[in-house]
Image 1 (cartoon, rainbow, N blue to C red):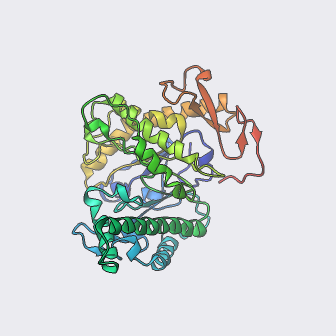
Image 2: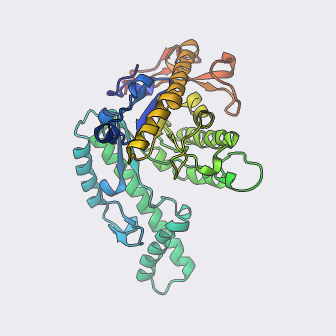
Image 3: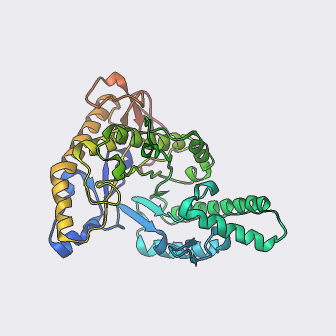
Length: 391
């Protein structure tokens, strides 16, 4: 049984599930108790968003994040190159100290910035306002420049400032709470949404997106955890094979970019939902299994849910937890633990030798290899390396 407090041992577990949903109102307002501990689901005390185990920081409550609001009105400068990085860092430091007063914080620490993306070409659709705002700044400085000159300079200025905001924010957070696992929600992303089109869906990340993620090596190297999402929209409902392919390749991309990091590889902890996005429709057991089947064989899993506004919603979540999700999590956690003990000396987690295979943990051990926990190496994680201090 995992305690609801104290994450120091989690990077050394074969598999763990974390609850990151504000379900405290279910108990306090509606009298609906969600008993997460019985299913070995790690959570904050009172199931809050910010606590000893997990802390998620949204852009509107952490620092002075430059962005445009829904009315396209500039906030804190709009684009990062028009904002004060020093003012932002000062405010973020103050916000962090208040939200997480314990300097010994060992939890998962997630920064949720979704208004803009640090690579210029990924700011399409509603995010094109960041192209426009950036070009206006350059045009004001160089009114005689040609459009292509303006765009090239705007792209350079935007990406340089975006990188500085993300890197310096992570560095400041790590300086204040050095034992936390710091990273940005949704990174990396592989943009494998082709299931929305006709034809055979492979789930693979488009080649140009892999190259773009390579350009974000500066982000992977300053992150102490990677938090991709494997959310499912309603377009994947009843398409369980596509769900498996979709989730597999998003997780594979997380594993790929972590190898770009030296010397210590950050853990990959995917965000999942128990409902299809923009709905209150719960994943079926088959869909749930397809969604995290790859995660259980390659890393930890990290669950996010949705806001709870009524007693009925809270009761529905409790029923789903008690009848579907909880039992599956217990089974997965136990299977991962047994495989770890049998194959990896209880010092690593089992991974498929062939990432594309459908092998499950109860099958032939020859189909699996060990990913050793920090401080251990060898085919069966039998050799301790250096003087590694457990997180």
